[in-house]
Amino acid sequence: MKKILLIATFLISAVTAAIAQKPSVKVALDSTYVIIGMPTTIHLEAVMPEGSDIMFPDIVGKGGVVAYDDSLRFLLELGDEIPKIDTLKSEEGMVTLKTDVEVFAFDSATLYIPPFEFLTEGDTLSTNSLALRVVVPFDSIEVDPAKFVDIKTVIDPEFVLMDYIWWILLPLIVILLIVASYFGYGYYQKHKTETPFEVKEEEKLPAHVIAMNALEALAVKKLWQLGQDKEFQTELTDILRQYIENRFGVNAMEKTSDEILDELYELSEQQKSSLSNLKQVLQVADLVKFAKYKPLPDENQLSFMNAKMFVEQTKFIQQ
Image (cartoon, rainbow, N blue to C red; front, side, top):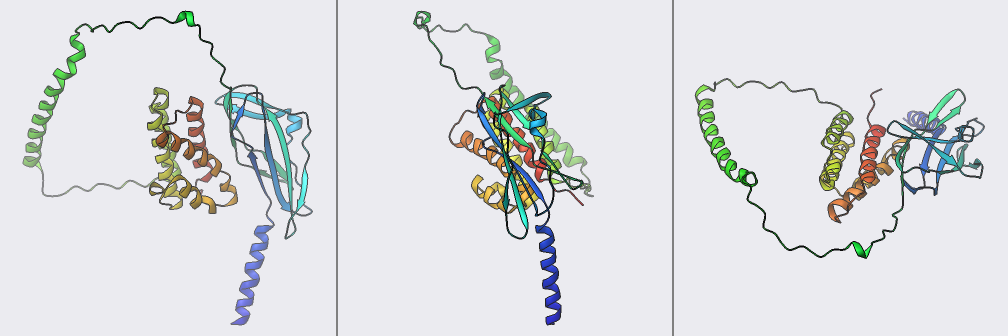
């Protein structure tokens, strides 16, 4: 029995060591918001076994960082200082390489930054993607007092029949519905059969497919474009909460935003980078629903983009 326990312990240790020796890469932004013309920093990091070779993305050679706003291509320009790679040794024979890249954006837009690719010993490792909103600060507004005029007196509007048409049609529609329901129920009672029909159960779709379909349906409604910010934010967060329940088994519909983020903190390192996208969506939605916050159009667009990115980055992929 002791020999079996020793063998099991040895195998577990070997598997743990193998997992620990696997290289990983990640990227992060100082902030998802930046004022046009002001710098922001992209942090690139690679963790790899000591003695291994890895090549960071050639950002300097490309002249900057490529980003997209829908189909438009942007180039985030680099600062004057050339990025340097710092090396930090960690435990269990692993080495951490870090570099900070200062970039500038000179166009206001909501940008999508594709994943960065690292080359290591014949293999390619990709980071998560990023979202960056570039905004223009509010300009002061000058008011010309000479343009002010006196308030006009109240004028009674002219009588227009079409203004009251619904007051006439609504009672007629209600009466027609009641009559139709009465005769329809009688027809059903007369023609219903004793044998119940069977409903074929549809095959359940994966959680990320359901969420993506719901997000596409939400985009078609154009709620925030019509000024319905609260309805848009409420439906957007409900889609994400339902996805989290289906994907991770977390009762997200009954939890607060902070409780949801705490539950998802145990995600794997690759998926944990997507929590910043989810956090931005939940924070803006809470401000809109509970603090009567009026988001800018770009904020609604950024929340929608981050919601799609969170679903895409955390979807379950069958092996």
